[in-house]
Length: 459
Image (cartoon, rainbow, N blue to C red; front, side, top):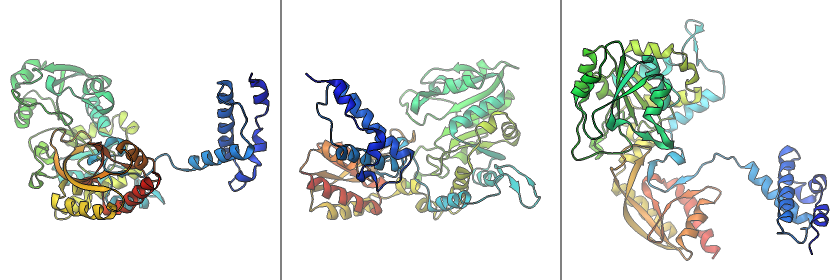
């Protein structure tokens, strides 16, 4: 019969294990002590659960602690390789930044800056000045400001309206990722939601009928970026809705979500509203994300009429939602790239991936195939990518991928790729691991090759 108490008494003390020679190569301190305690606590739990009959020798326990210590040394947030083909993959960090944006972050981070200081006047300034002129120049808006994400931008815009009625089409009461719902955001602003129309059809007369002088605060148009309704559907155009808003002296707010700054139709990507078109149509306040189709850092951008932007800048919530200096630096650098339409697509990774031709993708696939062919059966396949991040939910983008058929099951290979020092994320289809060229660069190929070699070596 097992004597649990006897086993528990045999567990080494923390100090005894810390003095083991195997741990002498590591810097003593709280992290190493924590690693040792984790091992001993785990051993104690296994004894009580009846899983241990013999206490491992100190070297074995020290080896486990060393392994844990090395794991703790690794950063939790780290680089990985996206082979899914989903460009704005929210779980994988959305938009990779342009080199110019990375340089701007380093410059802003390593020293002091004029974040809220006017060098010419020698007095306090606003952080919005660094990007406001760029946003208005690109969109045609009278004024602009930036907060930490688009949900915050929508909340701030609604809060600036005051605790009044906000009229929204039923077909636009969307839920975005993480179960965040437009009605919930609206409720937090203190406004009262007034639903009009039906799920599939809303007419301008529906907005007209819902207006109550003195109580109606705004019309809200929400771009249904993460789903599509088709068939027997209709809604008023922006210009018609803007004219009606002007008629009743209320602002028209548009949540555009993804924030497309250029017309992507010439690259075969249709149906994406451009920010400048909304401003031109008469929208008073437009909100959109910085880290989706714009291709920058996480940010919520607000552009529109000066009177409304001024109210938002002075609103008490503005400070709670303000953008960090590193994101601001990256956003400024990203926006500046848009002023050169000849190079913007090749310089911003999101746009480059969205617009890359299948011919170039096939060239990359052939290159990767030649590197992997000695280690597995490689097939080049045509697939369909997605933009991700709630953008273009049903508009597949033709792409090219490599299918890896190795000596081990696809699930085991996928796990092996995913758990390397640089995780490689792919997908499984027809019992093969698929790596999509649209979200891979040639710089990723050595990691993929090395990982496949080790996978085959483990069989």
